[in-house]
Each structure stands twice: as C-alpha cells, then as structure tokens.
Image 1 (cartoon, rainbow, N blue to C red):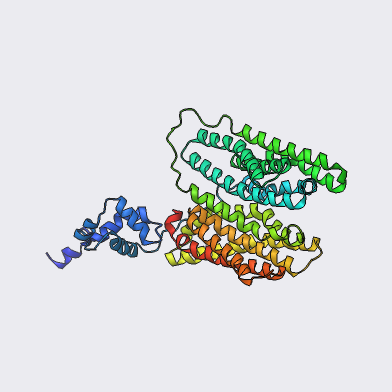
Image 2 (cartoon, one colour; image 1 turned 90 degrees about the horizontal axis):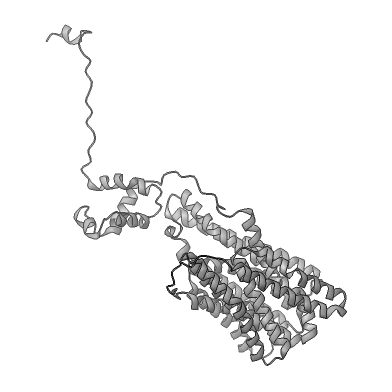
Length: 468
C-alpha cells in the first residue's frame, strides 16, 4: 500500500480500540459490588454487618480475600470505599410536630398541678405528717408509674395494644390501693390514707393520659382543684371547698384515664407472656431517682420552705427536658448523614450532647431566678439548692438518653453512688450541718452524678450503628 492510498480521503478512519480495564483483585470487585449498599457507611462495623448479611464468612475472608476474618476485611473495604456519598440530612425534628412539642412541654406543669391544693391539705392534716406522706407517696408513685409505663410501651411495641390497655386500666385502681396501704403503714389516720391514695391515683392517671396523648384531659380534670386551691389562698375559710375540688379533680383524672383505655386493640392478639426483662431495673431506677430528687429538700420542708422549694424550677422544666431528649435520636441520625468519618461523627455528637445539656439547664435556671426574685433572694443556701436542681436538669437529660439505651444498671449504680456521696459526708461530719454546707454538698453530688452519666453514655452514643 502506497502512502497516497493510506492518506486518501476515501480510506476509512482508524479508531483506537480501548479495552475495558479488568481488575485482577477480587477485593476491588467486592467493593464495586457492595458500594450501593455501603454508600453512606461511616465506620467499618457497618461494612462488616453488611458483608455478613451478604454471606461473607470468616472462611471466605481468608480463602477468597486473604484476610484473617470479616472484620479485618471490612476495614480494607471501608478504606477503599472512600468518603460516604452525599446525602441530604434528615430534618432534625422529623416526626415531632408542634402538637407533640406542646404536649411534652406540658408534662412539667401537669406534674405540679396538685401543688395548688397542698396548702389546704397541710392545714387540714398538719404540716409534718402531710409533707412526709406526700414525699413517701411521691417516691412510691414515681417508681410505680415508671414501671407501668415501661411495660405498656413494651406491649405496644410488640403490637399488643389491648394488653397494654388492660395493664394501664388495672394500674389506676391498684395505685389507689397502694397509696392507701402506704398511708396505713405510715401510721396515719383516715386523712393520710386518703392523701396517699389520692397522690398515687393522680400519678398513675396522669401516666395513662400521657401514654394516650390526652394531656389536655388531665389539665381539664384538675382545673377545679387548681381553682379551689387558689380560692383557699385568698379566703382561708374555703378550705373544705378546696379539699372537695381536689378530690373531684383526682376522680375526674382517674375517670378520664379509665375511659381512654377502652376499645384499644382487638381480641385476636397473642396471649403469650411478655418477658419481664428490664422491669426490675426500671423500678429500681424510678425509686432511686425519686429519692435522690426529694431527699435533699425533706429536712427543710417544715422550717426552711425557701430551700425546699428549690426543686420547683426543675419540676416545671421536666417537660422541656423530656422534649429535648425525645429530639435526640433524630438529631443523631441527621449527624450520620453529614459525617464523613467516625471521628467526625464523634465530635459532632459530643457537641450535640454538650449543647443540649446547656439548653436543658438554661430553662430551670431562668425559672430559678424568677423564684428567687419572688422570694426576695432569701440567702445563699436557697440559691445553691436552686443551682443543684439546675444541674440536675442536665443530669436527667442524660438519664433519658441512657434509659433509651436501657442502661438501667448504670443509672441505678450512679444515682446510688451520688446518694452515698451526699448522705455519707453529712454522716461523717457527726453533727448538724449548716444549710449552706448541706446544699453545697448536694450540689457536689449532683455534679458527680452528671459526670458519671457522661462517662457512662459516651461508649454508646459514639457508635453510629445505634442510629442507623
């Protein structure tokens, strides 16, 4: 062939043939095959879980890929995957509408509604006996309500709403009986028996109404009691009317709770018994949590109400703390979508937890300032007690998160240690402790509790797999 023929316009053009790049590394093939399922993986443990689900065993990792086990193989696959694929973050508050937020925020004030009639109750039964009965009944009711709610949510999660409704329906009259027995064991007369029964009935009725998202009914039921309590403060001669409206409010709340449990679920649900795993831990945690919250104020109920009332800002803010804790999971899931590496996620989740602790402490701090101003700034002991409960709000936020991971053993152990720290130091002193020293010791025990909760939460909250 001549040069002219080769360069002639009539000659067909010559196209270079590009052969596909064929990888001889089976690991590259594995990475390409698994990439769609692992596009958003941010740690090697996620890769290992997907590989095992795909049928990759330790033997396959050794024979086919030359790695000692699946986890070593997952480390290399994760490295070769590169940065996670871009994925827009999920809304931080997904699934939490405005109505849900309002409901959760109401929980704190709803807990405090019976306080409106406490002055009339104290005048009728005597301050010392009534305050002791209210404290004991509050501790028992806290543990009882927490256990019932936990079991009911377990049943609901197992798709057994009828059984959950039956449990909640039974819990209300059982609470009244438990409260009455508490009053009898305390050696009280008819008044203390009725007070114990009423206290626990209201706590369990509120638990049922909150379970079924009927907080409005709870507030409506207690409206007469609040009005009667306020009327007594204005006109002390209306004490009988205030007590009557308090009894009416408890009866209305109990009736509303029982009504809400009707017609839930069907008769075709499984009758298999629910495993009691976790119930004992929930009960112990509820009991210890209530004791820790109330024990510091108990010595001051009769003569230093300005110190004892330092718990009020926390009680009013508990709904806010619960709301922030409810938002945590969706916030953490959103972080997994924007984090590129496990270290990045750990930094972001640590910042999130620290910020939320600060927010949860800010609300009771503001309420505490209002309370101190209303009391005329009575002194440093009262201010320190308020500060202790401000810090306790942050600790309770962490407790909600730990309960979400079902770390009830850790919760009970740390609260028990904080109790020993406060009461143990007071006993070691061997003489009456001044109010300022006592409240300062309580603040120190709360700070220790907060630190222990942080250390206990860190191993779980840093693992991305919990939020996938």
